[in-house]
Length: 273
Image (cartoon, rainbow, N blue to C red):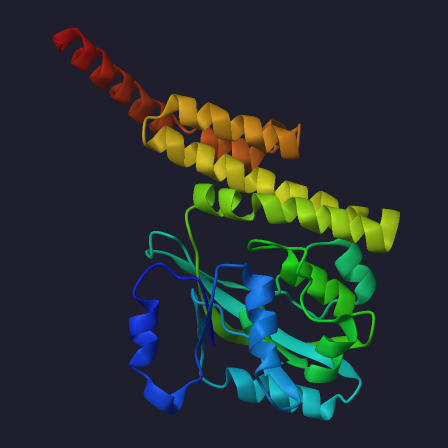
């Protein structure tokens, strides 16, 4: 595994495994470079990824490898996942429903997480690995699926293969914002107008994240923070406020009651000074 410049106790934890794993530490360079480094140190005809915030479910490797063995023309296989929200109180299965074609990936976003993917080493080598134009996290995986689907079919396992532990929408939107711009630039360079569908859906995804973060800010009684997140959402998708489910969540009565209580509390605190 590759420790991409962690600042917590990761090195100590890894030392506890002794020689059961091979661990390499590098300065923080982003997910693309970390995965490429790991692949360069690995052997075998298949590659399977596991990000730090994910958990493989039993049978995950066997199910994808079996499928690739049966489908020699396939370049990679993936499955569904269980998403646990940032509060760790709710979970749901996220299902892709079927395997996408290359044209599908150009037109739409697709629910493919790296930790649910097993790929042929030959396919990885054909595209030159994850694009190191991505300096942070996010987007490098979607661009990889686009690139590798030029070389063969993607196969799909219709069961959950992993658990993804999510972060708060505000944290996710900030973490992936820079990489989103890189994805748009690289997708347009390689595919031109054909990539506008997936670029548009990417913008919609980020707008939704920002609106969810705005709702969180209102729940915390932070009007300024909510307005900033709404402004960011509208940069991604100017008409996002017309999306009825998103607007309903944002403007529910409880949010305004919490906001009113927060404003009253601040007013009382200022008056007492």
